[in-house]
Length: 596
Image (cartoon, rainbow, N blue to C red):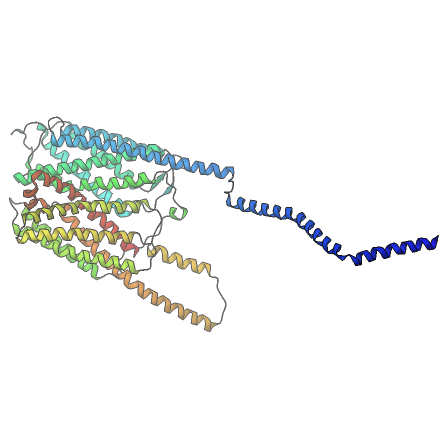
């Protein structure tokens, strides 16, 4: 029994072994089955991994969900920008409507003096001045004293030359109204009481406005923004209408002087012999003072408009932290500049001599033609020199390695707009003169000089605008170089080394510094020379038309071609812009000089 069981077990083991050895194909065929089972089991895992990777990539491409605080803050910023644009639009429309209304009154006074008189225009302007005066007082007494009202100030707004010009021309306009009151008091028999009230209102308005603009021209107001924008635009529109009225009144005075040779007395009614001055000496002083200071009132209005526009742009503005602090300014000295000031002083002395001779001759009944020839010959000699200097300065700007200042700056943008806009005054007169001279085909020396003067004047304006705008968009050396050097000194820690290595390093650094400074020095010196020469030339060309020299009208050539009224309107619209251009160019050239 035991033997049989053991034999059967051995036989069964031998049979299984023999079947395994005889049919190995089953084992070979079974191996792929096992691999396929493993692959089928691993396939879902691969698909899961692919899906997870795709989801991760899709999640990376999808925008991240912002937190509630970030979304709320961005929404507030968008609302703030929209509110700022809406406030600017509404205040701009307010100013536009006020200017159109005042312009309609002034044009009606010019073309129909019976229906709309000068007194009606004065009443409208007096109302606007009172409203602007009330807003200025409210701004100083209430708006600026509120908590967090003025957190920032624009360091580029209201430079010293702008505020100085504001005070200078404001004082001249204030004295102009004093002379006007004195002249009206001397003719009290034929003057109404309103003729005395209007100058007094204007004196109060000028005094308060000059003080507010001097003190708050840099403000970036953060409270009552819409009301502040409307007040600024109302005041700007008032000054713009005062400028338009001053231009038209200057046209009336020049018309009287050109036709009759003397200043006629004007009254509200018919002129009679009973309207005589009580004191002839005082009346003569008041009349001369009024005529001498009259051009400054137009300049004062233009400067006020520019300052008010900058304040309007800065309402609600957030200034960057690095711009919040007042930047350092380079001292104004004449170190390294010799030839530019000397040539500029020669031009200034020659201009003063020609100005005095022309004024003496203009006081007589007629001006001799040789004085016109002398005047235009002076311009023909000076203008090409200024143009060449501007082109040389623009080329030097392209050679120097100063970085462009790309920071958003409303003040600089306004300076560029004012330069380009004010240049249109003299350039427009020049183009009208060219057309008149070419059409008449003149062969006289004076007419040829006028033609050359007109062409050179256009070229000089274009070249000078390029030079000033290029200089204003360059980062000043006194602002970039010290900060870079200071940053390098703070960033680089002191390294230990041998004295020989230290000496060699200092020698290499000294040679590199001397080489770079020598290349920088001649560019800086040339820019200083050019800037100072152009400053003195522009002062000369500003002085001559500002104090009463208007040969464009008195030579008679263009007046005969276009007609008296049309040419006088062209001249008296373009000349104040030309005077403002020269004054604004001086300020821009001073900034270019300091930046060099």
